[in-house]
Image (cartoon, rainbow, N blue to C red; front, side, top):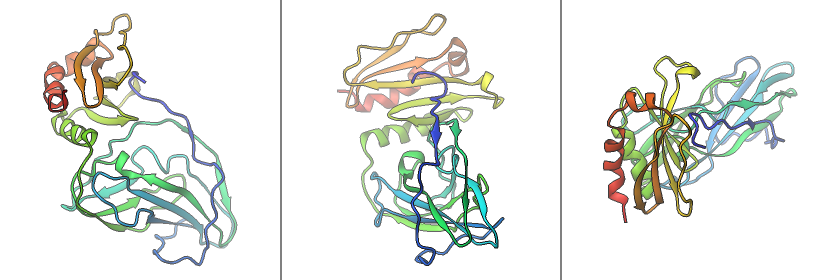
Length: 259
């Protein structure tokens, strides 16, 4: 949980739900290699600060059976999301290692790749307005249609407010990610796993406190907050060297939620 990357093994090839080929409420994306995909909103009226679920389907549009691999369809920045200002909305989900297998569709057959993906967890949606969303081409599943959705006014949760504030305060050469309630700051200047480092903002309502490993900086307590007890954990002295004032910067944002 406190390592550089929360490596989660996922299989995106659990039994998929078949969907009617004749369902044409939303246009399919452009066909490629005998397949087309369709992205649609499950949440009828998305609201800021609330879950925002999407569905992705794939259909055989060709003249022979066609195969795809969906293991990366719902993780690792699988969507292109643009906000009301036309700017790309940053991916703030984790980095995941996945496993899977190919699925073959018969002529005219279609299946659901994911049925309820909450993109409010994976992307920094912090203001209302119209968003455009498109799935990226992966695993032989072509890019989907361009989906336009309006997110209505609402209020971010305390966690959402903290995350948005920390995102603005994070250095340009670091990335911030949401790992199931822990906020992880990631640094990898070369893009290589061997160069990857992290600083974790760890929250718990009843845990006694994290212990540092040999050679790891001592965890820093930021006290009691609305999220429970909060600690900062740098995974190595090198992480501190890359972001010398991390404790001051992060503590400044956390203090608004202190009890």
